[in-house]
Length: 224
Image 1: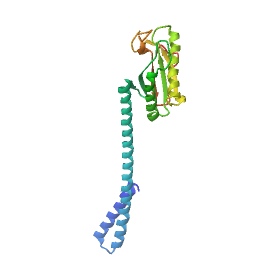
Image 2 (image 1 turned 135 degrees about the horizontal axis):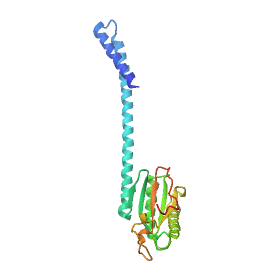
Image 3 (image 1 turned 180 degrees about the horizontal axis):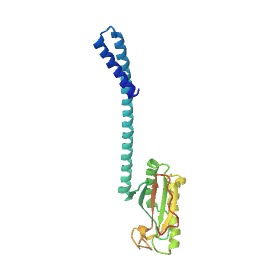
Image 4 (image 1 turned 120 degrees about the vertical axis):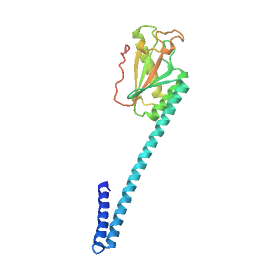
């Protein structure tokens, strides 16, 4: 029942009661008054129950959303504390700067980094289903820029293949791009191998685009 109809019913009863007070029972019998009161009381109860149901439903949705956000924050915090990942929130995406590194002049996913990628895939599968995941590959500055562009792409593709083949993400949601040796994306500027030197720059970053309408960077955008 709409509020307007309910107000009209209440006004009718008030008018009816006023008529009784002014004109006596000759014009309005007790039975008529009781019938009107019963009808309006029923309408008011129905309206109140409907309102209560809407409030309960809203409260339930808010509670569920709060619980889901709390759960997400716990999982993100676990990535931070267990794997030393840093998480950058953007307007329509989340960038995970993860400690997934590569040996010098190599694009093989290391055994020690697989647990991190498995946990990342679990978070994506739980909270970001259907989102686009861009795997960004990087190198240290040793070697030529063109070679490093290619090596960064190989690293991004190796991680993308692991996420889809072993960690269980859909290959259709994964994109691999390379930033090569782009200096403005180096963790330690100019640090380079061979050996373990410069390993901080030989890495990937994982970007989850939950808007679903972004275009991944060009694989030739090493200068970005």
